[in-house]
Length: 203
Length: 378
Image (spheres, rainbow over the protein chains, first blue to last red):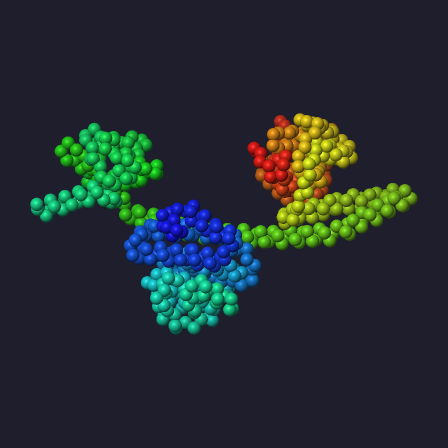
C-alpha cells in the first residue's frame, strides 16, 4: 500500500503511514528499514525492469527524503555520546538517500553524523575529515560503475588519515562484489542498516 | 505503397495516437485549429479542435504572428502553451504550409530538459540536506536552552536565600538603629535595601522564566473575577504611582468579569504590565487600564503616553532581556517582565501584543479565553 502511494506521488497518504508508525513508537530503525529502505529497493527494481520511469523514481526519492524529516525530531533527540562520523556519497554519485539513512542511524545511536550529501568532491570530503576529525568515515555507493571514484577516495583517506576506520555500503555491492575493498585493511563493508547498528553497538 | 509513403503514414499514425513528446496542431489561414494530436490535447487538457491558435499559446504582448511563423519555418520558434495544470509549458515550434492549411509541430528542448532535471535533483538534495541540518540544530538549540534554563534556575534558586538574608538583616538594622545613626549612614542602609530589593526581583524573574521555559509551570485554575484582580494589582502599585507622580484611570465593560484562570499568575502579568507602563509614563501623565468582556474571551489593555517604541524593538518586545524602550524612571531590571507575561498568557491559551504610535501612545493588550482550552476568535 505504501509503495503504491509512493510511486503514484500520493505524498499525503505516505505521510499518514509514516506518522502512524512514528506515533505508534515503532523503532526508528524499523521504520527506516521496513518502510523507507524496503520501498526504495522495490522502486529501484521496478525501474530496472522498466516498470516505472526515472522521473517516478526521482519523485519517490524526493518524497522519501521529505518523509525522513518527520522522524527527525525523534531521531536527533537521542542522548549524545560525544562521538562523530562523516558520511558522504563519492563523486558522481547522485543517489544520496542511502547515505543519509546511514547518517541518521548514527544519530539515532547518539553519534554526531556530518552528512555531506550526493556527489561529494574528494577534496571537500578530506577537508571535512581534517576539520571534524571523526572517529569513523562512511562512504555510500549506489552505482557500481563509480567504483573507481570510491577507490580514489579510499586511497586519499588511507594516505592522509592512515588507520582511520572507513565503512562502505550501498546498492552497488548488493551482489557482494566487495573484492575491490580487500586491499584496504581499515575498510569494512556494511551490508544493511541492521548490520550498521550491530557494528556501532560493538564499538 | 512505397516505403517513404509507408513511413510517412506510420509517423502520422504514431504522432496522432501515442502520447509522444511532439505535439502538432493544424489550422486554417485564420488560425482556427481544425486538427491536433493526442499530445496537444492532453497538454491543453481538452480537445483543441475549433479553438483559435492564439488561445492555445501564451502571447502577453500580442507579438506572435502566424504569417511570420510560417514564412520563417526553417527556424525554431520558442512559444509557451497553456496547459491543464495552468503552468505554461515552453516548446520549440516549426510551422509548415500545405495547401490552405498550416501545421505547427512543437517539442521540448531535450538538452534544456536535461539541465533542468539535473538542477532540480541537485536543489532537492540540497534542500533536504539543509532541512536535516536545521532539524539537527533545532534539537541541539533546544537542548542548550534546557541546559541554560536549568543553570539559571539553579543559580537563581541559590542566590535567593543570601539576598533574602541581606534584605532581612538590613531591615533589622534600619528598624533597630536607623534613628540612632547619622543620616549619611542611614542613607547607606537605605541604598542597600533598595539594591537588595531590586536584586531579589531580578532573581525572582529569572527563576520564574526558567520554570516557565522548562515547561514545569503548572497553572492552578479557578473561577476568578478579572476586574477585581486588576483593581488589587493597581492598589498594590499605589506607592509606585505616587513616587512617579503618575495617575491611573481604570475602566471595564462590566463590574465583574469572570474567567477560569490562575489568579496569582495573572496578577503577576497585570503587575508586570502596570510596572512597565508606570516606568515609561511621563511624570504627571495618566496610565489607563481597561478590561472588556467579549463572548468567549476577555481583553485587557494598559496604556501609557511615554516614548513610542521603535519598530525594531517592537518585533522582539516579548523576548527575554529586551527593554520596551527608554525608561523615564531610570529603574534597573533584567527585562524579563514582558517575556514572563507572554509565557503566562500563552499558557492560558491567550495572546499578548503591543501597539505604539505618537497619537495613542503605547498600549499592551492581552486576550485570554474565559475557559481553559476554550476557542475564541482572535
